Amino acid sequence: MTTRNTKHIGIVLPNGCKAVHGTSAHIKEPFAFTSLSMHELDTGDSHCYRGQFGFIPFRDDSRLPRHIHIEERYEQDLELVAERILVLNGVALTELAGEIYVVAPGTMVEIEPGIPHTWTACPPGVVLPDGIISEGQFLMVYEYSEQTGFYPTRSTKPISSTGEYERYNGDLEAIRFPRLNANEVIATGTLIWNNQTTKDLRLAN
Image (cartoon, rainbow, N blue to C red; front, side):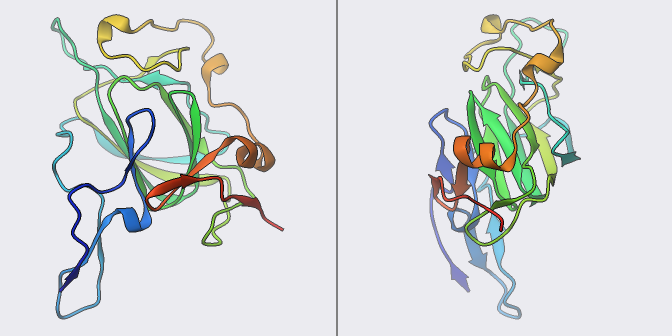
Protein backbone atom coordinates (compact mmCIF):
# COMPACT_ATOMS: atom_id res chain seq x y z
CA MET A 1 0.00 0.00 0.00
CA THR A 2 1.34 3.42 -0.99
CA THR A 3 0.04 6.52 0.79
CA ARG A 4 0.99 10.15 1.07
CA ASN A 5 0.14 10.99 4.65
CA THR A 6 -0.60 14.58 5.47
CA LYS A 7 -2.51 16.03 8.39
CA HIS A 8 -3.68 19.06 6.44
CA ILE A 9 -4.70 18.66 2.83
CA GLY A 10 -5.33 21.36 0.25
CA ILE A 11 -4.49 25.03 0.45
CA VAL A 12 -6.10 27.87 2.39
CA LEU A 13 -6.95 30.91 0.27
CA PRO A 14 -6.46 34.44 1.65
CA ASN A 15 -10.21 34.70 2.41
CA GLY A 16 -10.13 31.57 4.60
CA CYS A 17 -11.77 29.23 2.09
CA LYS A 18 -10.01 25.95 1.35
CA ALA A 19 -9.31 24.35 -2.03
CA VAL A 20 -8.07 20.84 -2.73
CA HIS A 21 -6.70 20.03 -6.18
CA GLY A 22 -4.35 17.47 -7.68
CA THR A 23 -1.41 16.55 -5.49
CA SER A 24 -2.74 18.63 -2.58
CA ALA A 25 -5.32 15.88 -1.97
CA HIS A 26 -4.56 12.86 0.21
CA ILE A 27 -3.66 10.38 -2.52
CA LYS A 28 -3.44 6.73 -1.59
CA GLU A 29 -3.41 3.30 -3.23
CA PRO A 30 -5.03 1.16 -0.54
CA PHE A 31 -5.80 -1.98 -2.54
CA ALA A 32 -3.07 -4.54 -3.15
CA PHE A 33 -5.06 -6.21 -5.94
CA THR A 34 -5.30 -3.12 -8.16
CA SER A 35 -3.44 0.10 -8.89
CA LEU A 36 -6.58 2.16 -8.24
CA SER A 37 -5.74 5.49 -6.58
CA MET A 38 -8.02 7.25 -4.10
CA HIS A 39 -7.99 11.05 -4.09
CA GLU A 40 -9.27 11.97 -0.65
CA LEU A 41 -10.55 15.55 -0.72
CA ASP A 42 -11.70 15.71 2.91
CA THR A 43 -10.16 13.80 5.80
CA GLY A 44 -13.29 14.25 7.90
CA ASP A 45 -11.88 16.84 10.30
CA SER A 46 -13.58 19.95 8.88
CA HIS A 47 -17.22 21.09 8.84
CA CYS A 48 -20.01 18.58 9.44
CA TYR A 49 -22.36 18.55 6.45
CA ARG A 50 -26.10 18.06 7.08
CA GLY A 51 -27.60 20.28 4.39
CA GLN A 52 -28.72 19.77 0.83
CA PHE A 53 -26.55 17.79 -1.58
CA GLY A 54 -26.83 17.83 -5.37
CA PHE A 55 -25.34 18.89 -8.66
CA ILE A 56 -25.73 21.69 -11.22
CA PRO A 57 -24.58 21.63 -14.85
CA PHE A 58 -23.19 25.09 -15.64
CA ARG A 59 -22.58 26.88 -18.93
CA ASP A 60 -20.74 30.19 -19.32
CA ASP A 61 -24.10 31.97 -19.60
CA SER A 62 -25.14 30.48 -16.21
CA ARG A 63 -23.92 33.32 -14.02
CA LEU A 64 -25.06 33.10 -10.40
CA PRO A 65 -25.70 36.29 -8.43
CA ARG A 66 -23.32 36.88 -5.52
CA HIS A 67 -24.70 35.37 -2.31
CA ILE A 68 -24.07 33.77 1.07
CA HIS A 69 -25.88 31.00 2.92
CA ILE A 70 -27.81 31.17 6.20
CA GLU A 71 -29.59 28.40 8.10
CA GLU A 72 -33.26 28.00 7.21
CA ARG A 73 -34.91 27.42 10.58
CA TYR A 74 -37.75 29.17 12.35
CA GLU A 75 -35.63 30.09 15.33
CA GLN A 76 -33.52 32.96 16.56
CA ASP A 77 -29.72 32.96 16.48
CA LEU A 78 -29.45 31.57 12.98
CA GLU A 79 -25.94 30.66 11.87
CA LEU A 80 -24.02 31.24 8.66
CA VAL A 81 -23.61 28.09 6.58
CA ALA A 82 -20.50 26.57 4.98
CA GLU A 83 -20.63 25.07 1.51
CA ARG A 84 -18.35 22.78 -0.42
CA ILE A 85 -18.23 22.50 -4.19
CA LEU A 86 -16.63 19.74 -6.25
CA VAL A 87 -15.87 20.66 -9.86
CA LEU A 88 -16.45 17.22 -11.32
CA ASN A 89 -15.57 18.02 -14.93
CA GLY A 90 -14.99 21.11 -17.03
CA VAL A 91 -13.35 24.34 -15.87
CA ALA A 92 -15.16 26.68 -13.46
CA LEU A 93 -14.83 30.27 -12.34
CA THR A 94 -15.65 31.32 -8.80
CA GLU A 95 -15.59 34.69 -7.09
CA LEU A 96 -14.75 34.40 -3.37
CA ALA A 97 -14.84 37.64 -1.38
CA GLY A 98 -14.25 39.61 -4.58
CA GLU A 99 -11.34 37.54 -5.93
CA ILE A 100 -11.78 35.50 -9.12
CA TYR A 101 -10.37 31.96 -9.19
CA VAL A 102 -10.11 29.48 -12.05
CA VAL A 103 -11.04 26.01 -10.80
CA ALA A 104 -9.76 22.90 -12.59
CA PRO A 105 -11.73 19.65 -12.84
CA GLY A 106 -11.30 17.42 -9.80
CA THR A 107 -10.99 20.38 -7.39
CA MET A 108 -13.00 20.76 -4.20
CA VAL A 109 -13.57 24.28 -2.88
CA GLU A 110 -14.81 24.64 0.69
CA ILE A 111 -16.43 28.05 1.19
CA GLU A 112 -16.27 29.30 4.75
CA PRO A 113 -19.46 30.66 6.35
CA GLY A 114 -20.08 34.32 5.52
CA ILE A 115 -17.90 34.47 2.39
CA PRO A 116 -19.80 36.16 -0.48
CA HIS A 117 -19.42 33.99 -3.57
CA THR A 118 -20.69 33.29 -7.05
CA TRP A 119 -19.95 30.81 -9.88
CA THR A 120 -20.00 30.43 -13.63
CA ALA A 121 -18.30 28.25 -16.23
CA CYS A 122 -14.97 29.38 -17.67
CA PRO A 123 -15.47 30.61 -21.25
CA PRO A 124 -13.94 28.50 -24.05
CA GLY A 125 -10.26 28.82 -24.88
CA VAL A 126 -8.40 29.02 -21.54
CA VAL A 127 -5.58 26.46 -21.30
CA LEU A 128 -4.57 24.97 -17.94
CA PRO A 129 -1.01 23.79 -17.18
CA ASP A 130 -1.88 20.16 -18.00
CA GLY A 131 -3.26 21.11 -21.42
CA ILE A 132 -6.97 20.96 -20.53
CA ILE A 133 -8.85 23.64 -22.48
CA SER A 134 -12.02 25.21 -21.06
CA GLU A 135 -15.13 24.59 -23.16
CA GLY A 136 -17.63 26.93 -21.51
CA GLN A 137 -19.22 24.37 -19.21
CA PHE A 138 -18.65 22.41 -16.01
CA LEU A 139 -20.49 20.11 -13.62
CA MET A 140 -20.79 21.26 -10.00
CA VAL A 141 -21.53 18.95 -7.07
CA TYR A 142 -22.59 20.96 -3.98
CA GLU A 143 -23.18 20.28 -0.31
CA TYR A 144 -24.14 22.58 2.60
CA SER A 145 -23.28 22.23 6.28
CA GLU A 146 -26.93 22.96 7.19
CA GLN A 147 -30.19 23.33 5.28
CA THR A 148 -30.04 26.71 3.63
CA GLY A 149 -31.29 28.96 0.86
CA PHE A 150 -29.99 31.70 -1.40
CA TYR A 151 -29.20 35.05 0.27
CA PRO A 152 -28.12 37.66 -2.31
CA THR A 153 -25.59 40.34 -1.43
CA ARG A 154 -23.92 43.24 -3.22
CA SER A 155 -20.97 43.24 -0.81
CA THR A 156 -17.81 41.21 -1.40
CA LYS A 157 -16.77 41.65 2.25
CA PRO A 158 -16.86 38.51 4.44
CA ILE A 159 -19.18 38.62 7.45
CA SER A 160 -18.91 36.75 10.74
CA SER A 161 -22.55 36.70 11.87
CA THR A 162 -26.04 36.81 10.35
CA GLY A 163 -26.57 40.19 12.02
CA GLU A 164 -24.04 41.68 9.57
CA TYR A 165 -25.94 40.45 6.51
CA GLU A 166 -27.53 43.19 4.39
CA ARG A 167 -30.04 41.66 2.02
CA TYR A 168 -29.88 42.86 -1.56
CA ASN A 169 -33.30 43.57 -3.03
CA GLY A 170 -32.28 45.10 -6.36
CA ASP A 171 -31.96 43.65 -9.83
CA LEU A 172 -30.05 40.37 -9.51
CA GLU A 173 -28.39 41.01 -12.89
CA ALA A 174 -26.28 43.68 -11.19
CA ILE A 175 -24.66 41.14 -8.84
CA ARG A 176 -24.33 38.19 -11.22
CA PHE A 177 -20.87 36.89 -12.10
CA PRO A 178 -19.53 39.33 -14.71
CA ARG A 179 -19.38 38.25 -18.34
CA LEU A 180 -15.72 37.48 -19.07
CA ASN A 181 -14.04 36.32 -22.25
CA ALA A 182 -10.96 34.08 -22.24
CA ASN A 183 -8.54 37.04 -22.35
CA GLU A 184 -10.25 38.67 -19.37
CA VAL A 185 -10.12 35.42 -17.38
CA ILE A 186 -6.37 35.17 -17.97
CA ALA A 187 -5.88 38.82 -16.99
CA THR A 188 -8.00 38.75 -13.80
CA GLY A 189 -8.21 35.13 -12.63
CA THR A 190 -5.97 33.12 -10.34
CA LEU A 191 -5.70 29.37 -10.91
CA ILE A 192 -5.90 26.92 -8.01
CA TRP A 193 -3.33 24.27 -8.93
CA ASN A 194 -2.09 21.47 -6.66
CA ASN A 195 -0.90 23.13 -3.43
CA GLN A 196 -0.63 26.72 -4.68
CA THR A 197 -2.30 29.47 -6.63
CA THR A 198 -0.78 30.60 -9.91
CA LYS A 199 -1.32 32.78 -12.99
CA ASP A 200 -0.16 29.94 -15.27
CA LEU A 201 -2.98 30.29 -17.82
CA ARG A 202 -2.83 30.87 -21.55
CA LEU A 203 -5.05 31.13 -24.59
CA ALA A 204 -5.69 28.17 -26.84
CA ASN A 205 -4.16 28.46 -30.31
